[in-house]
Amino acid sequence: MRILLAEDDQILADGLCRSLREAGYAVDHVADGANADAALAANEFDLVILDLGLPRVDGLDVLRRLRARNTSTPVMILTAADSVEQRVTGLDLGADDFMAKPFALSELEARVRALVRRSMGAANSLMRLGALSYDQVGRVASIDDKPVELSAREIGLLEILLQRAGRLVSKEQIVNHLCEWGEEVSHNAVEVYMHRLRRKIEGGGIKISTVRGLGYCLERPAEAAAAE
Image 1 (cartoon, rainbow, N blue to C red):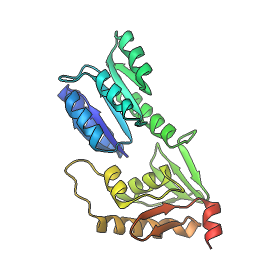
Image 2 (image 1 turned 90 degrees about the vertical axis):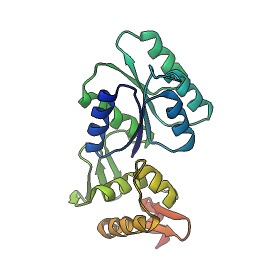
Image 3 (image 1 turned 120 degrees about the vertical axis):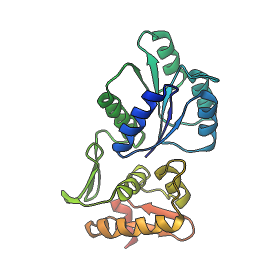
Image 4 (image 1 turned 180 degrees about the horizontal axis):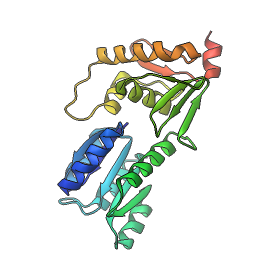
């Protein structure tokens, strides 16, 4: 999962980036609203954490421009504790949640998980697809309730496929959602990760189909049975 963090306080930004990366997210950071707007116009993100007091272009304008592009990416706004009017305006403009500064990192991480879960259409942190279950909090996958040992890259890939279960996912989409700026992951590397993930989970009746030249699809159990 890839997050854009727009925060001009470098100390806070460093702490958030470190915490979120340790939780398994790919995080890109910008320190002003103009760069945030440019990043959102040019890239796909699974979540935006948006400070409202940004230089150059303020956070509300960044949010306004994002929603004007008909983009439904979840947005969490960061505000000063006493800025009730800003929070109300932000929510009315299409923000999904807010955190008042100062805040506990553990609460922010929980809210991030909730927003990502909502965007995936999941009611709780445990997602199920046939015999496959995935715990978003512990980032643990299981087949028939037996844990499956996956690398960090394989977990990230599984999250992308689960979010789009039943739909085609291109290699380009996988790279865009798996990697931060400056990371280079080739399409050949994606094929290697996919091969390893497929080998580890397909024994449980979970099928990842390949559409040559287009991408991959994590099939829902009924679809997999019909294809056999």
